[in-house]
Image (cartoon, rainbow, N blue to C red; front, side):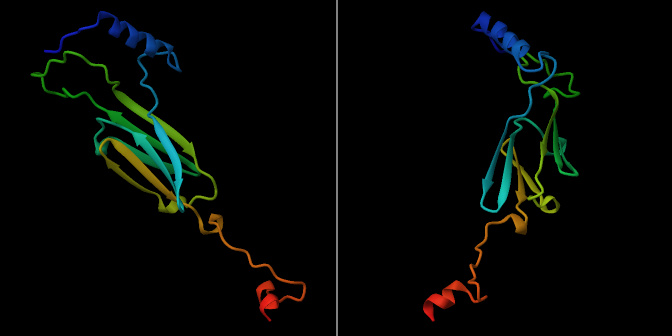
Length: 148
């Protein structure tokens, strides 16, 4: 059995939920996400603790990437389980990200480990950094003129 040690903690939690963006406490907060570039790919990392991998759905429609995940109750169908305290939000979480034209949406990869969903999106060849050769007016490369 879990014991409550601070009677005001529950009131603080409810107040935070009511003051959260969206204003309703029945709707879970958005899943936290980090987005960063790692070399020639973009990485999106979503915190989804307690979510089963089979409860995660990733879709791409045009240039919109949608991640949906459902956190289900621990008790499930088992009538033997009696929940003493339930603070973690349950239900369906959803997050959409608009992807630029410079990303290769045909080669997106995703994995889920330790409660973190990691989505990797390669950068298209045309968007990768490259060196441009400078030519002289005569059409020869500048490097050839300097050495020749």
